[in-house]
Amino acid sequence: MSEDNNPDHIYILRTNADEYIIGNDQFPEHEIHTMNLNDALMTNLKTAGLLNRNLTLLDWLRERDYQGVEYEHNFDDI
Figure 1 (cartoon, one colour):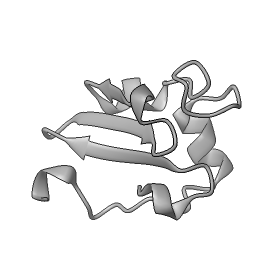
Figure 2: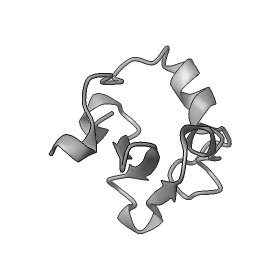
Figure 3: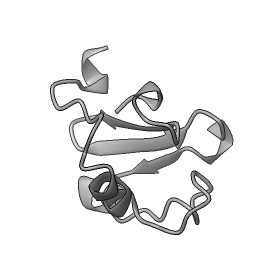
Figure 4: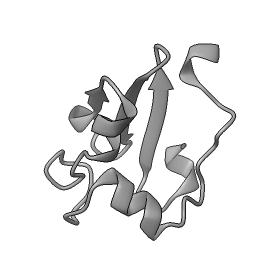
């Protein structure tokens, strides 16, 4: 997901096959690296400093009905 695909400026990148990077282009110093999808989805976005609301990445994605997620892209291909 690109930060350009949502008003919260959250981005999600998959890298090294199963690692994930979560960030917000407005707060680049708070970028989070996780070792698997479960850890990424359970990341609390407020605690991580990426959003002012207290919810996990999974809850945030559900709230958006997964709008903006690009399933056929992968950071390893760049």
